[in-house]
Length: 110
Image: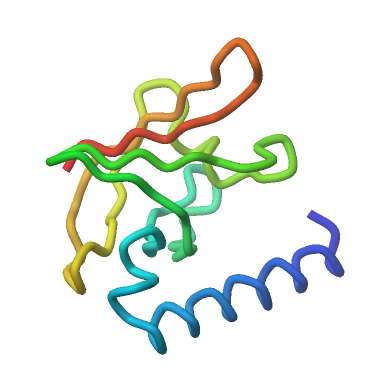
């Protein structure tokens, strides 16, 4: 990703994380933090994402997936990650799926 774009994304993510910590439960019902290790880089990343939860399944819709790369870490057989729910880091396994319309969803089984 270009440097300017990367910096803008990093600033946006920091703002979202700040809102989440400031407004707590109200924001936490739809936003969470996902932590994962990059397949190629081995670097640990934490990013804010919107989510829907049903029991032990968390679904993360990826907006503008062609402009983002993080979800590609969960293609194929998927990969482990951590999802912060109710203030607790929960381990899970994420699996990305692209539908016929190009939409991407990462499904996490806790």
